[in-house]
Image 1 (spheres, rainbow, N blue to C red):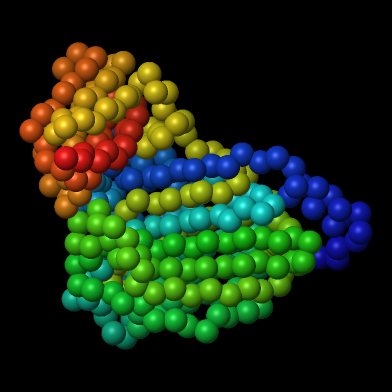
Image 2 (image 1 turned 135 degrees about the horizontal axis):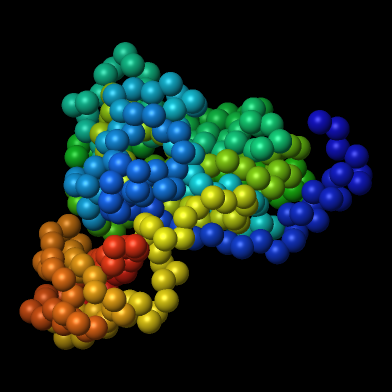
Length: 322
């Protein structure tokens, strides 16, 4: 593609124009049936990924296929990424690592995140954790030197890719990191390794519609996948507004108060309430009692509160102090 001054000006103006920042978490906890669940509502493609209502960090998750056709079997998120000037986009996916599932001759990567620009899919960014526990960043014209990651048996990890585009210089800055979340997936994140770099690409860095996707493979060591995160400028989107995690729910729908060993949850509709400790143990599971439900006798620490009204699942965190 040849960039004339007029075309370059148009593309830069597109990037400079106001864009909505989408901050979306998909926990895969919502599952009504095979055609109405978090996976099919928010993702396309991804053959072999199987939704499960149990086994995840706060409930549901995805069971990874044994192996994949890397770069072709990825699950494609429902919103494209539209770079915003001076903004760092963040994409991540969690995985449960099991070394006993690794097939040493498979060359399957346990987890990968893909960015493909609409203008030319070959001008990609791919961040991966390799079979040999290396953090890879691969692009159309540049490959970052591999960096090591520490992966422990039966630990949950969050694999994060951060990207900042500087279209005026045709430059992209990238950072990939593995964060250890402990055996429950709810522990405070600790870095297990990271890799960074920058490169130039006169197509990717000025594109305004970049496809975002991920993949995982059991024989690479990722037996379960969970908690996809997209925080970036929102491009073309087919994302639903009626299912899955909704952090944008009206405060009138879900209010949470924490005080002296108790949590009070107020909902405008009858809902199912679940409360988890930081170690993943469920301490309350039942229907809300009218508009306001109080759960007493809780110790100090971090809690995850999940409210499901049949159309939305909203999750928030609360800390109880002495």
